Image (tube, rainbow, N blue to C red; front, side, top):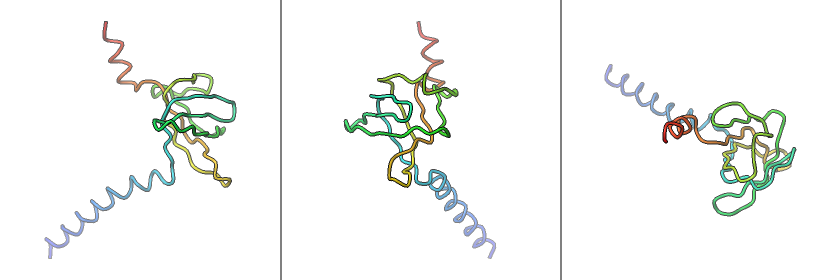
Length: 114
């Protein structure tokens, strides 16, 4: 009986471990590519498949450059971005977060090279 309980607990734990991260992302859509146009209310990103994707900017979206809080003014055309967005009631993508710039560890590693 104890062996069955342990097996059941382990099985449940593994199931939750793989399910919770999926739920944490919700309906987020990832847009990765290079910024082609920056407007106060939207970004146009060219994906690796050369598709142009428009993502609306919102006051609640978070913006980070190399892991540090930034603003839309810090973002430049041509920079690589990773955007987490959701579709709004009109079916348009709204950014929840915009990240760009090298990862903090990569930036520190690059600075060490001469």
